[in-house]
Length: 326
Ligand code: XMP
Image (cartoon, rainbow, N blue to C red; front, side):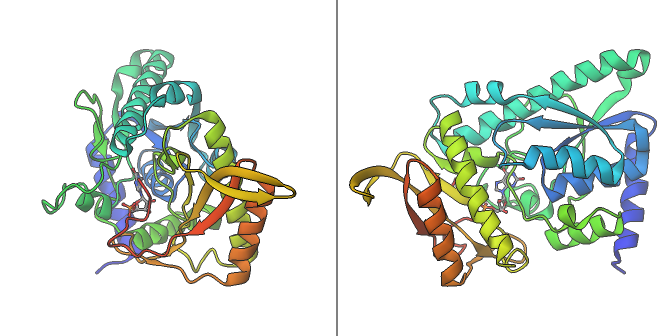
């Protein structure tokens, strides 16, 4: 029978079997999936695991600090932080196509890991040769949507499945491959991870890079980070975090519309709010958020974020819309 302690026990045994006495690297994305995958592997092989957190500059406000602080405190895992913002932004310069962005981000991710691996190998001396495994928090829906599970057509190249380059040098450890999100949260709870990590809403690996419709630049990211932080703050303050699955905040960077503020005409960008409710992200409905909460978010974003003069609400279910815009 399915119980979380059975799932944990089986996963731990399988990881020990697969990895043996070798060593593994796990990329932390800031999300619940990679955190639970890392905690599982940490439980299985302890100090044979080193986590790598790639700060790609596409994270939300305060998120990197949270990963470094909360996760390390909860698990005691060895963590290596790589500041790769410049590298990602350089690679993304001039690119607007969503699939292209996803491929670039996925590719750079692996390269940064390979670099981190090389550094860990050098630091580990003779034992360094054993760094042979890469842990990923791939979930069942990721497998299915990327065509890996059932032969379903590839909808988007999720960067932790379809976007991997051919020249990957690690063997993958994917302990969550058969699980849905709610099961992953239960496993995280079983492993003693704190609420802030276990109940965290999903956030895509490519981060804000796929929430800017248009080219990704530092200025646009900073702008989106501000808008996103306001939306999250108001949703949390209204006690709505558990009612919504996630709420992507999207910057339509290539769109401008006319507005008026004070005495002047503005010509700014729209921000899209995409609050959804869902069981497993395979299908979703748009969340019927209270009007007063929407109103506060709209007022604050247009007042506090330069260059944004309009906030719009996405009222599309999935299908036909996906949760993310790219
Ligand atoms: P879509 O947009 O396909 O998103 O309806 C479904 C769920 O997956 C998340 N998502 C990703 N997660 N890497 C991830 O780890 C990705 O490349 C990726 N793309 C989308 C999205 O946030 C939603 O929860």
